[in-house]
Each structure stands twice: as structure tokens, then as C-alpha cells.
Length: 96
Length: 149
Image (tube, helix red, strand yellow):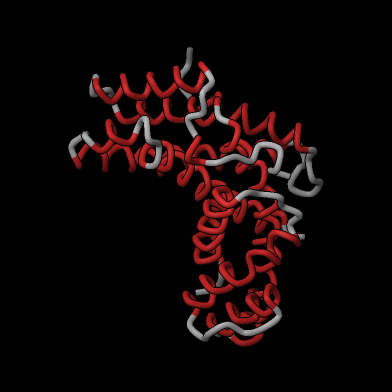
């Protein structure tokens, strides 16, 4: 297995999934979507640009963590993977 | 992987207090015209509080390895032929055991649509329809990015 190629694919793939999940949260959530769509188009575009940027950053961070733990070569347990995903979301969410 | 946290995205908001609170936070950031980075960070908090998105992110790990296998097959053919269409066709053949179309973009899209069940099975994914939609769309975009052009 070429770890560099897998890392690149994993970043790309995670970035696409993060982006889709976040866009769904704003655009396909019955409670949230009406408010989102009532925003000026320019503001919606700004938010979507930010979603793309954050998705790339989260994907790079998460895959970096997977790499550090040796999880590109060895598959983590579901619990270990969930823990890293939650760590990533906490890092990029609102600091409280 | 991914099954335990499967769920209907129509119920993304769920009924738990935490999820409702996160949605209220996002509404507030939108109504108060807060900076886009704050709005999106609040959206990330919603993902962290919701089970189906985390299940999808767990499944993405194995799906990425399936993409890697497909891309490796494509690259082998590309090194031999120098033809991106032939490379995509070889990748599709590996997935669905038959050639699908000829043009690279069409092959990628069809390979994922037709071969999704096989891909899920090889990646040992147990996902629901809503998760499949997100994962297969991501897979098409990723393959489009990483297969020879």
C-alpha cells in the first residue's frame, strides 16, 4: 500500500463528505433551511465558501491524526475512529 | 461500520435537547448576521451532536480504502496506456466486472452508481440510504479528482 496515495485520497474523500454533511445541515434541515434561505444570496455564498474551506481543513486534520496513530496502515476500531472524528469536530466547532 | 449510527437525514435534527439547542445557536448566528466562520463553526457543533453524520464519517474511512483500490487499478492501466479513459474503464471493470461506457466522467459516475452495492460489500459498509447518497456522491468527486486525467 502506498501510504502517500492513500492519505491524499482520504483527505479528498473526507473533505467531500464533510462538505456534503455541512451543506445538508444548512440546506436540507426543515428547521434550519428556511432561515438559511432567507439570507441574501451573497451571504449564502460566503457561508458555502467557508464550508468548503473548513471541510478541507477538517479533512487534513483528521487524516493527519489517523496517520500519527498509524491508522492508515492499520484499521482503527470503530470507537477509536469515532474518538478522532469527535476530536476533529470539537477542534473546528465553536469554542465554549 | 456505520450501521450503529445510521439514521434518516430527514430526522437530522432529531428531538434531543442538545441538537435543538445547536440548531437554535445556528439560527441566532444567521439572524445576528455573524461572520461566516462563526456560522459554520456552529454548524460543525451540530454535526458533533448528531449521530447519523458521525456514522457517515466513520464509514468514510473504509470507503476511502475502496477508492484507493480502484485508483490503484486505474493508475496501473494509465501507466501502461497513457489513456485516462482506459484507466477509468479498467477501474470500473474491477468494481462491476464489466465495462461501462467510454468517456472518463461517465465511467466514474456509472461505476459508482452501478457498482455501489459491490463497493459497499467490499468495504464492509453497512449504511442506510441517506448515508449512501452522501458517500457515493463523495466517492464520485474523489475519483474524479484522483483518477488520471
